[in-house]
Image (cartoon, rainbow, N blue to C red; front, side, top):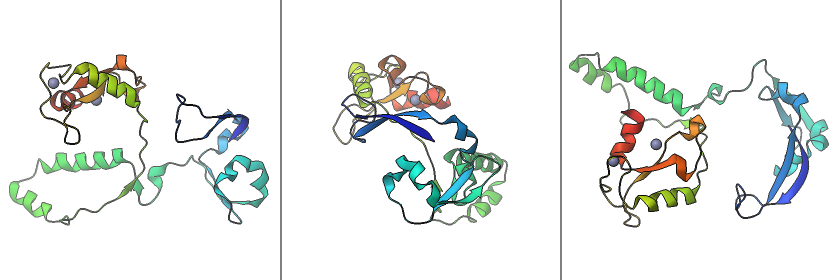
Length: 196
Ligand SMILES: [Zn+2]
Ligand SMILES: [Zn+2]
């Protein structure tokens, strides 16, 4: 829960400009911190989308559905699993599969449907800076920053040389989305950086 301390119009150059018209200055209400991810509430009547800003006005219309001892984790929801979990599960099975005889492998491969099941997942992604990407690709001028070879093929959509922008210190590890932290790589070198 946050307390709104100010409202400003979103200006070009500010984060999320174009997605949001207003920017709220907020202050976290630390007195509710212990409830984060644990308290699930339901409105007694249908409420609009924006009333989350007016929590104090709707508090009396909320009923508590669940008060859980532990914080909510999306992977615990039936039908939702994280991409990471799915990959781990796949890789565990793959490792075991390599140990099997060919005949067993073929037999086992038939236990799955030909059309794979689709599952729902929750992912969070970084909202990357398109200008940084443009600068890095322009500077590379079609040449991989690692092997110094020209891009292996051209992009279908615009005929530009196909290179990928790699973050030297990954965004997931707290790296910056800046020109200094980026390098344009051919797909081969890029895979090697991550998996080699
Ligand atoms: Zn390369
Ligand atoms: Zn990368």
